[in-house]
Image (cartoon, rainbow, N blue to C red; front, top):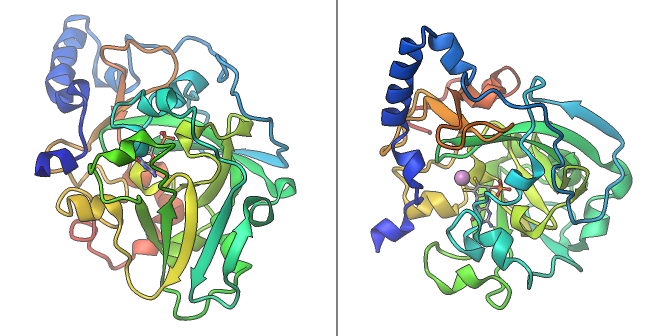
Length: 327
Ligand SMILES: Nc1nc2c(c(=O)[nH]1)N[C@H]1C(S)=C(S)[C@@H](COP(=O)(O)O)O[C@H]1N2
Ligand SMILES: [Mo]
């Protein structure tokens, strides 16, 4: 069973090195260098609008917009909403989009528990006020080696958490996804130890880049992207971005998290994007950027950046830590 618990990697992700090398040979023949390669030469994105296919959810009011991805081309809505990881609906990239129709994201409430002065069950509308919503364009890097650029809509998680007045014993924050077997067919398979769980150190949770998202592309989240409430931690691998959150608990010790429990040698608790620390089965030096209309065969392979390009903002959180050991 152990192989089932591993992050399945599609064939085109397992062999990027050979494809990459073949492509390098090709570029050499054409007289193009590594610069062209890094820029995704041969797969120049066509001018595009982010919303090729209109998002189905209601449009959201947005107080301000900030691009945290240096103007990099956004992933098309169609790709961001059809190339997903959401094992509660199946392990295939299209399963969540195909199998989500039964899922009811409303009404929704979240249990706030643990070391805080205020705890209890809160309706989504009281947790995330619509007048505070902002749009943030972030890069998203999956541990499997692909990446996107997505305009999320949400509020900084820290601003939400502070309202519950966590005590000094709150050293970590533990998150739990909903598990409804009648609405989520993947739950019938013991692929992971359900419900899906994630966690952050309290300073990571309070960092201004950490977003509690309720939308993307200006609209409510579709089911496959984690409706109605998911986490977005742009400097960490995508699996930290837990979907359909129903419980947030302030805890004293490092919580058990789903992928870390499934394969601790492959998926660390911290999961900071780090090109220097390879996954045991593949390199993390480069990523396939799913954005624009690149050649599907190659994607746009680009260099992976430390902390996914957010080092300036978040590297100080890890001062003095050995990020090879605490990966
Ligand atoms: N509950 C839950 N959350 C999850 C997952 C999951 O399977 N279940 N997959 C994670 C992984 S591996 C990634 S890469 C991102 C994908 O988010 P996206 O589909 O919105 O791009 O969601 C993360 N959150
Ligand atoms: Mo992922």
